[in-house]
Image 1 (spheres, rainbow, N blue to C red):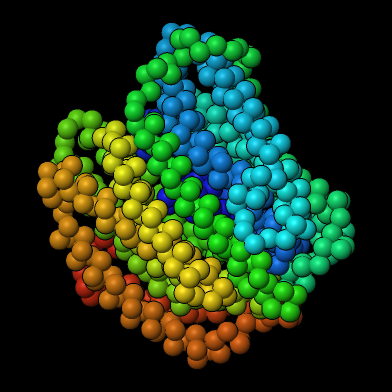
Image 2: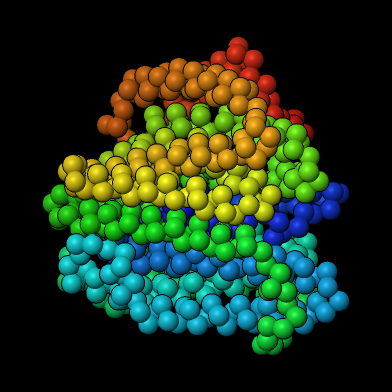
Length: 576
């Protein structure tokens, strides 16, 4: 389960990636293509495995109901805490020092101390938070019964230890990256998915699948179920971290336990780290309130009537982040090295040109992805989360539609934030986070005051999308000042106007085909999740193909050259 930070959350989010990617040095030019392919393949394999893992989890406990919502909060807690920890201490302070340590004369000593101090600190924090599980769960929930709070607390007791292993995964992964061993860090999450699939599979064999409206009667929920479910989730993260020891040991690296702060370079960490930490904490404050609101909404569910809660929001967020993580992040990452180098050399024109190129290329994809998620929310959910069932899909799809309107600014936010960090400007990122977080919280409060509880989670998704737009507008204004008063805004806006026109036309065509084949009713619910998945697949594929063809043809007619830049690498590989 993931949490919305800026922009993505889970340990691969913008918050977790710290102040731009300088933490990981670029590979040698001759190995760039090979390393990029390895990392891209690892990301794709990880996402695919994650979808299978999620499918089985939803089959076990559902996407709505008491158990699903309690487990979502508990399993979300280590992700939220790690986003704060990673954004403030690991990536902003310690990870850059790991890179510097490999260039120092006393490399082994500095690395040993950095890893030891970090691991001991994270272990202490994890132990404290695990002991305070009950208070942490109460902080993130509202309106829960004592029985539900007790279940969430037990889940949290088993899940919060993931925080230590998330930290260890980051530390060991950055040591590998600093040694230019890029593959293991990207492929390690596959081990997590394998463990989770096995564990959740055993759960399904022993205890069966969840009812259509989730598990609300806790009279039969016992300790073995809790340990197997939450223990599997934590064991998966532990495996993801510990598997990195294999390539490190094989390469001859040894980690000796060595305490001490002297001589490891922590004093040189700039103020950007503090501003980064403050921004992440503020973002997570917004996430905390969003979680409380969605948890309260989910608590209104009954055995007869399901209401979208934090479980439904988590599933919608999972689908929403797929196009961003698979395509947008890759484009932004490829541009960052050039932007960072140009910023260090004072080449403002090059920074402006690369930023414009990135925004326009990303826009070609995200505008279409918004239309696709809006039109195909239900069949896409049926395909990706078939075990949610008819009721679960009906609750997830509207949340996904609301979230999708924040997809266009999502990619732009990531690229713009990296430009700020290329100039070592964390202060601006923090102050821009203030109004965007206030907009999110204000939207949530407005929903609680004026809307029925059944629509709170949809409104929460809409508020999150709106906060994305506020963020990207404010970052645009700040970068315009930073880059000499102009941002090539004319070309960027013209590109988005053309893609919007093409996306609206293709979206209407896709919606027409969707209604023509039967709409929601054509999805095969009630006949097993395999048939549900297949029905979601063929409906999504048919409507999506129509949309892609119309979109590409219209962009050709509108002479959108950025389409070639987006599709060029893919077409070249297909030709080969």
